Image 1 (cartoon, one colour):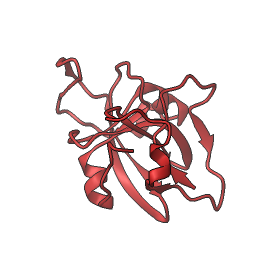
Image 2 (cartoon, one colour):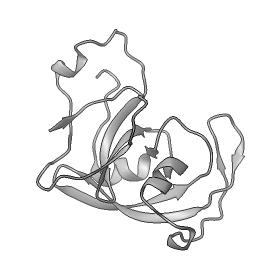
Image 3 (cartoon, rainbow, N blue to C red):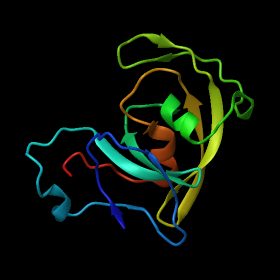
Image 4 (cartoon, helix red, strand yellow):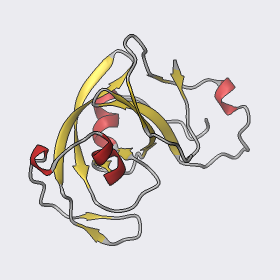
Length: 149
């Protein structure tokens, strides 16, 4: 199954238990450009398998120096404060405000046959996204995101 960008959508559930044997391949072809208006500069938003669940509305951000998880996903994965380890460095939000993280958690992220353990920083702020995958994940897997598609 090829994963391309998904528009931000209201959905009854952003999480689906992963189906055994279904692989997410993060890749693009010219078919993925069909229906886009060029020049294309929307955020790259995908579905990824995180912690055994297919998670919608994950933004790929080449500029983020951490992988972020927002409250909807945190609650959807039934994570508890005792699951977190301390993370004391403040972050700067999109609005330029300082954000104090709730903590950090390591979870598996699957792309194709590759499964890597990634550290997510949990922040309790509103976002239309469930998570942001930044440089740590991109450098681990080595993909190149395409704003063209």
